[in-house]
Length: 295
Image (tube, rainbow, N blue to C red; front, side, top):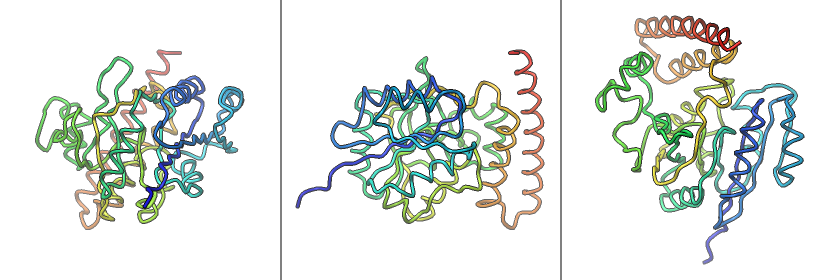
């Protein structure tokens, strides 16, 4: 019996990142899925910076959707996820760039492991530095505290280092709790069981939430360090988060904890929500100072 054709739909959500998006789309043209067919979809969240015209002019084969306002990451991706019938769907950030062979390697990895519902690749910054968010463990109050205070980055194993999924090597492969929303390769049949992205998140944490729900349904989340994409950290959100982004990030932390970890733990929950509030205040202050210095 003949194997079904390899098909991949790539979904990119953009917001005021025209140059990064152009670089991303150009990299996909240079390094497409070669053993199979690939379609690229861009959903633009009302950028108002010429993104739509640029994509139409330079990448006529891209399927482009324009939204009237900034609907956020989850809702914009879900528009395409609801419509696709491709066996594999890649959610890709516009601040990423493909490298040769990466897409074929990742689809091969999925096809050879039918129990894997989602996979992520090695992400590096433009200077070659590994982006540790490419593979993560689900945060606990302690591991999150260690991560945000910088302690977690100074240890290589144990509870304090757990946020970075240290048990799987950067160049290795294996099951992890979560991969980064910058590159999430999803098996459509698994997605149909798990459901779409939770639109209760406007921006941030929806990738972690989705990974958690894949595990809940019995699907593995796989990290493969043999394939690499470039990831311009903060490329789409800027060096300093705007107020709405800052609030969304911290609200997302609270929503994730409330959904999956906060039941029946009133004292821990009070401490977690207080910590999130303190962190939000500090983050808003740092971002405000940073923007003033840049201005």
